[in-house]
Each structure stands twice: as C-alpha cells, then as structure tokens.
Image (cartoon, rainbow, N blue to C red; front, side, top):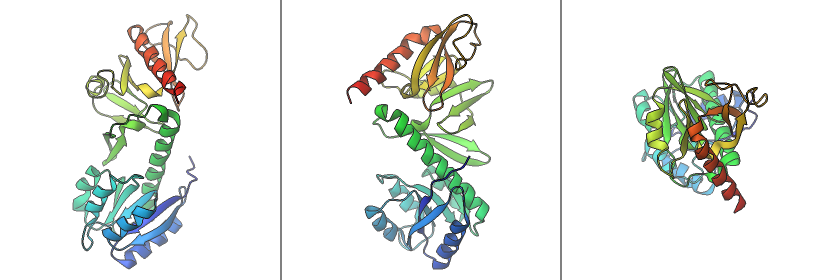
Length: 279
C-alpha cells in the first residue's frame, strides 16, 4: 500500500553531524517520503520551535545537554498536536522507558536507512488511522484522555490508542485488534477487556457477541439476516442461518450480533444518530 503523504520531521540532536546524517537518510526514504522542517540542538530549542509550529514526527536523541530526550518526549505527550516520537540514540538501555512514553520506534546509531524507512511507515500508518478515526467517528469521540493497548510485535512494543480501535474479536486462543488500517494479534481475553472498557453507560465498547467487542462509535448499521442470508455484505452466522449482523465503520466489515445484544446495538445506533442530529 502506497503511503503518499510526505511526513514533516523535526530533528533533535546535539551533534550537527548526526543531524546531517539523518537528513541525508531521510532524503533517500520513499513511501512515505519525509521532509526535515527544522532542527534543534537541545530539548529547549525543540520546545521553543514546537510552541510556534507543528510537525508529524520528532526524531529525538536522548543524551543531550540540559533536558534529555526522555524529558522532552514526556513534555510532548501534552502537546496539542502530539507529534509522533522516534528515538535515535546510541543508548539502547533506555528503550523500555522510551516505549513507556509512547515512542513509535527506537533506532540505534548508526541508523540504517531500512530501519528508518520502517519507522516512517509505522508513523504514516498511525497518522492515517488517527485521521480515519477522526473523520469517521469524530462526532462521538470520548472526551476523556486516551488510553493505549500494548501489543508485542516482532519483539517490539506497539502502543495502539484505544480511540483508534474498531473492535476486538476472539479467535481460538488469541484476540484480533482491528483499526481502520491494520489488524493485530494480541494476548488477553474479551471478558477482561469488557470489564475494563465496556461496563456502564459510559463504556466505549459493547459486547455484541461471545466473540466480539465493538467500539460503540464504530457501529454503523444493524441488519437482520433471513434464512438465505442478507446479501453479499453479510456473512453467514456461525450459530445458524438466521440472525443479526452489524456493519463496522471505516472497514465496512460485518460481525455477528447475538439476539440478546440486539437492543444494546440499537441503542448505540440511536445515540449516534441523536448526536449527529444536534450538530
């Protein structure tokens, strides 16, 4: 999948030669491409620039004079635009702390172009998911601070914002987490996720079936399936020929709905329509 948008990048490193090398590597990256919009030699300089400007990504060194990169990353978590952060450092021992601060990736020096390109791809995908979530579900965004789902991906920790999750689906011993652009396999149980994110009227997610937990704001359509199905978009129900399905926003996938949850799904649809009608 082509990622055509060019990422705007702020380079933060106290070594001019390190910034020069990163700039050269970024110029060689494609799909997505990246453009350096500013450089900073200290965390203070970076913060001063970010008060007046915005960017998609901050490539950030850790060991710098004054405030270090970890402190800057912590401050960026409260930044209105909240740019993505990728650490670029020779000190791999800080990786765990970096991911705790929601770093998208952690590159060790000397940086290879292939690793930098992979990090840019992850950032572009995250920005795409965020944009899709805002455009498709912005009218029902939860005003509470976002939470993250931690996923182990090929030896790295990936943190997916809960606001970007469309649904969780159980399959044998694993769970699938679905966003607008990606599917991830994760450990855990639907019951645990439901107790954390789905209880009460203010819960973000709704248990629609024994194997599925869906974001309330992602419910787009409820359809009853007859004995011969309800069309190409609606898959056969594993529990029988007849039943209910719902369409999930953005991805337009259909999930089975148990009979006892039909009323709750209707309530979620009605709440969304009511919200849309008042704006």
